[in-house]
Image 1 (cartoon, rainbow, N blue to C red):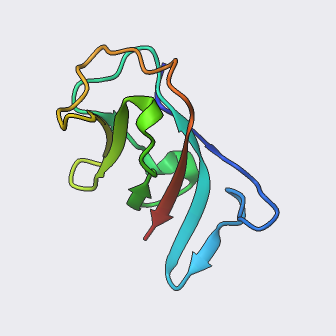
Image 2: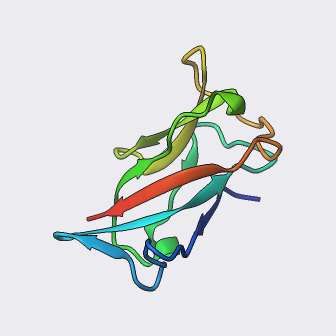
Image 3: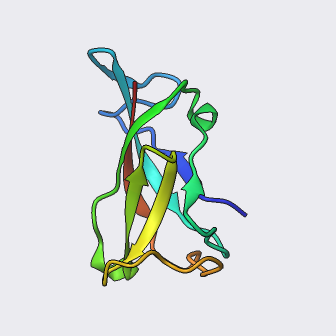
Length: 108
């Protein structure tokens, strides 16, 4: 399995077919959840999954109930999970039981 990102069509937010535009940037709000085997180094976020050429930013609000925080690495195009102590979650860790997180994806 892989990282799951779902775009939530809310009445005041864009859908994946009609993203919110801010200048030259497009934004999507949705949710994400991990899978049963976190890959060492993080999940590669393929911009094609959202119909993008490039992902500029991924923002996931911290939630201590997860036991970890999501961090976007633009240099590797990976979404990484870090334990609250500051170390990256070990490869192979099951994140599927963790609560779903909100996510903001900003494209350039």
